[in-house]
Length: 202
Image (cartoon, rainbow, N blue to C red):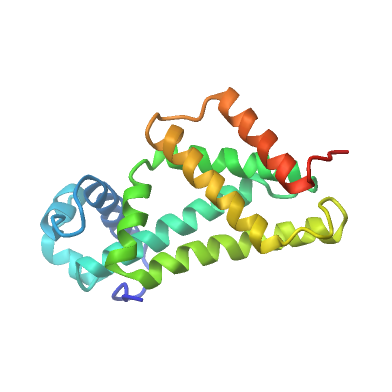
């Protein structure tokens, strides 16, 4: 996986500059493809000198890879926090999906960036989905163990099916349309509940 250059800065000013560069990179890579995006445009939008870029990142690929990691982390944190301390698995799913769709609506270029990452750095592309799946697996496995979900449910199969549902519903309504309508969300959750429980809900 491509490196992100120097370590995270320790000063508040340094962290703010790095954040500004990542936010600008999200705009630029979302608007242009990787090939046509430029460091000069990133630094212009971040409001910093072009030479400042190299204090934080070694090259264009480095900031792109770090951007994927940053978006991935923030997405997973949003979902985890939304479902934190929720013991009912189906309610945790509901809150996690809501948080995911809200994140996508706020960061509508994330699909373009993640899809392009497969060709810019395939390792970070796979890393994103594996990290997402690994965190998800813990919750599904716990729900199987405590009897909320059927014993014969394969947690890994369930996780990747759920990720696929979220991916395409998010693409169609959150990324393309700005938000997932309530009726769409409710129908999706009925489908999710039926799939996880085998159609039987207590």
